Every structure is written in structure tokens, then in C-alpha cells.
Image 1: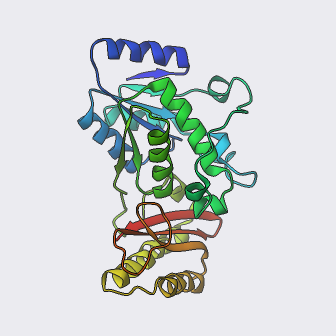
Image 2: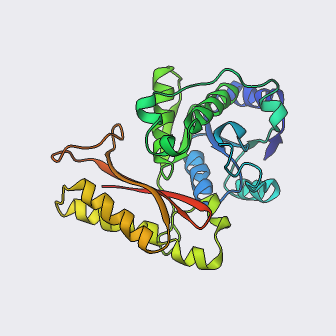
Length: 279
């Protein structure tokens, strides 16, 4: 496994891979990796000849009161996990390498998709994501890029980015990996105290109950959402949203529509957790 701190070094290595006809899969990350990330890398290895992963904590997608400074930087442990997952090339730039000048040019997604749900609570988040992902795509030039479905809205923003900019990249969504009790694996789970970790499974349980209600034919989506929010609040959480939406565009569904997804974001203590379940 080769580790590249510079754009020029990574490009030279990938030019050599392409010259021998290799198909390249790419998994961008912010590091502090878990088995969910590793599963994307393993999936990429099954779909391509060479897997590239990036580790970069992207300042552009953090708000002024968010956790950029305390987000864990664990490159040594991450490299061991990536090596085990079959990654061939790791792009691990520092901030001055990826943003040598102030990044004044931004990629702004469609507000109809990016300003709702996560975007409503994290203004500018998806602009930061789209900007860094577009830049990474230009550097790596992969055939395939893999993203986890846990970040459902982010995955949709990236699909739209690739489609509307006509980038020759197939976007693959990897299924959410969960702990034995159902909690979605997340780098931010490490912020939870032991007591909070035991309580954190409630988010999955609330989403599961909402999904079962919809599957049973309940189409009173506002009441389903309100009941789920109340259950979290009554258990000491600070929920931000629980929303039943169309999978196609994350807009509110009509009663007759199928292919839905239920999305949630909530604070447990100071830790913000997100999750979703497709219906």
C-alpha cells in the first residue's frame, strides 16, 4: 500500500495504474475509520483492479460551531485498516496541499435537495461536501466511487453532481453497517459515553417502528414523525428531524407513493447522530 501526501505523487501513481489498464475504485473518507468504511473498500476491491482511499478532514463542510478541531485524526490506525481492506493507494494530504489558496470557488448543489433536512440544520454543509468531492474526483479520476448509505442525502447530492456535470464515474451506495444492537456505525459514535452508547440504539428502534407503521399501511406521515420525535424527546434526546420522504428526491410523499425512506438526526448529549431506513 502506498501513501501519497501530494497530488502530484498520487497522480503519477494512478497514471501508471491506468497505463496498465487498471480499473480504479475510490473511497473518500475523513478518517477515523470503522468497519463501514472497510466494507466500502472491500466492495471496491471486488468491483475494480485498484482501490484508492483518501483521508482528509474537510474544513469546508464544518459549520463554525461544529467539531472540526476535535474530529479524531487517526491516520496510523486508519492505514492499518485500509491495508487489511486491500487498499492500494492512500491519498492523505494536509490542508495546504488540497487548498493551497483559499477555496473561493465552490460547487453549490441544487437547493431543492441540499437545503432540506441535513442542509437545513447544517447550512453550507453540502456545498463543502460537493466542493471537496468534485476536487477529489478530478485528482483521482476513478471509474467507480463508493459512499455509504448512512449519509443518504449526501449520497444523493453526489449522484446529482456526477450526473449534472457528466462525470464518467459510477457512484455505488454501500449498505449501512450496524452494531449488534442496531446502531449505525459512525466515526462520531466514539464521542458517546458508555451510558450514551447504551442509549444510542433508541434512534434505530424509533426508525424501525416508523418503518413498520408505514409497511403496515399507515399513511399518516406527520403523525408517524411526531410520535417518533416525541419518543426521542421523552428519552432525553434532542431530535432535529425525523422525516418520511421519497427515495427519488427526498420530497414529502403522497399517500399512494412507495419507495420511501425515513431519515433522522438527533443529539444525544453533545453527539449528533444520523440514520435512515428505506421502506
